[in-house]
Amino acid sequence: MDSKPSLVEGRKALKEIVETCEAIERRRFNPFFLDLDLAVKTLRTYYPLWEKREDLMLDAETVKKLSRVLTLQNVQLLFQSSRMCGDPAVIQEKIMRAGVKDLAQAMLNSLHPVVELEQLTIQSLKKGLEYWGSLKPFIERIRGRKTASGLSPVRAELSNLLESGVLQVEDFTSYLEGVLKELQGEFDLKGAVDYWDFVKRGGFSSTVDRAYAVSFLVSYGMVKMEVNNRITLRPREEPPGKEGTVRLSFPISLAGGEEP
Image (cartoon, rainbow, N blue to C red; front, side, top):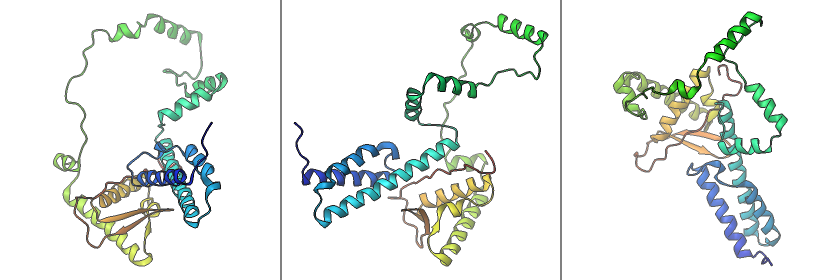
């Protein structure tokens, strides 16, 4: 027989949920690390026990934190869908729930033949049959081939790009200064600047460049990023040292953008 829930257990459970949500907001965990269904079930279990004002405030804070995590999950899904990629666990769950008819329709929608003819003829069908009939199995075609050798791919840091000439120090520095100056001007006029309003200006290339510049400024402490109901930017008067700074990255949702 299950024991009845107690106030002590309930307070401890809600505090753990709040701490997990805060860790997710600080980008220490993936937004999907937290099981929202289980968290909501926990809230419902202990809600009838709350009588004191402090307990009700803790319950409200937990709901608020869960809503922020849900927002971050939505942002991540939008980013993944815009990049035509998906979480393996989500895809597996969709496949398990789909019926045979849905799977067959998905295969037809994603089928892209190697050869496309505007009009089928006896001659073209004959050539296609001869081609596929003479084609050796894939294993035999790759047998004996030598695999490419060389260095493994490495991550390109900013210093590598500067040394290789892909980026110029003067151009990159002046561009960062321009973005920071623009942000400072808007901040002086209206206070905290909305991240998406500031980044999504111009076309696709401009959005990517501005997002990279803001990410660089935030990572090196020149700009402070705050995540509440919305993401805002504040320029710092005196950037802190590199020690203790936290690198943040936010996906750019380009659904409906000018370019794919």
